Amino acid sequence: MRMLLRVVGVLIVLSLIAGAYFAWSLSHAVALPAGPVTSVAAAKILLEPIADGPNAAQLRQGQYLARLGDCLSCHLRADGEPFAGGLGLNTPFGVIYTSNISSDPDHGIGKWTPDQFYRAMHDGIGGGGQHLYPAFPYPWFRNLSRQDDDALLAYLKTTTPVAYQPPDNKLVFPMNVRAAVAVWNLLPLPPQPGKQTPQGATAEWSRGEALVLGPGHCSQCHTPRNLFGADKQGEAFQGGLLDNFVSPDLTGNERTGLGRWTVDDITEYLHTGRNARAAAGGPMGDVVTYSTSLMTDEDRHAIAVYLKSLSASTDVDVTAADPASMKRGAAVFSDACTACHLENAVGQPTLFPPLGDNAVAQQNDPTGVLHIILAGVRVGPSPTRPSPLTMPSFAWKLTDQQVADVSTYIRNSWGNRASPVTAADVAKLRSTLQLDEVRLTDNSGDH
Image: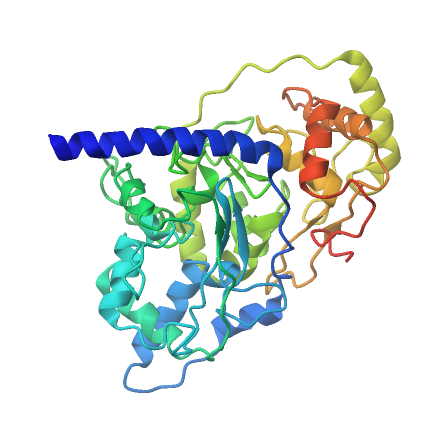
């Protein structure tokens, strides 16, 4: 009982500190340098043929797991070498830099044993015995088998060694004390595949569940977080905030989720990064480039089948848009947006997405739409769609009020329904993205 009281006491203290810092960080967050410029060339390392040999089958399995787990997206910094790490991840608790997982013996994991790698993947304990921050998705990777872990390590040890040391993390107390992660691990972790398998589930559904809840770690981005940075219970896949982007609702909600999408829509999106409804930009663009576009057709389809089975999130009431704002927004849209999205917002499917009945536009949190308008966005390329389409930044052209008006107009036209946006919302994000002064942006590829 005494130990339990101590744990509860620690949790309360950490929650107060985390809550205070979380509130502070929302108004003091900074934009990180851009992540890697996604390219099909960089992704080719995950498609390189593996020569026949004694453990060729294991290495091929490990290479495919590196695709499923989207390892390259995080462990590749701008202008860096594959798997060398150093990409800064902006969290509410500060910046976490990804580790070097190349085969380098001193800076990477070249000396790691299979047991050390298993502990990292399942328990979040690094090779030196240190607690790993859950920005590394071990709460999901723990669902992989020991055979999978051994295969992935074997493959990573064949990668080119890179003698690079990522920067130190920039976290506030007590999050900069790694032992605090041990307390975090007492919180409920994401579910394991097979724990809630519905009656009549097919083998394909089960495969999709294993991929989504395991190596794909989809809910890490697409689930809202509590003050501790853990998934909010009962809100899995209902959308989350990631580095000033919104990861959309993936449930069956017809307004904000995948309710209007078919299994084929989802499969095509995972394969090419675009379909008749949407295009994958921001962090999801990297996921397509380095992971989903490199999966087998069967696995993409299984993921789609599983996602389509998710119950719809509860819809929320939205505030009616001001008619004056809608009128001003219509004028801005006609001037700035119709060249690509056309006057009636039907877009040019697979090139420039239509904006009517658009789930991204209708997310309850408008941050994603505002980010795209202010900073632009770059659609991730894939082997079948190697040209990275871009939308330019409009921060240089539109005022805060104009961005608010056009966002409100888009979010409430052509069948869309979402709460209006204020100029204060835009000003806050503009400052966070460091776009108060005119400059070229990396997101839209015009830097």
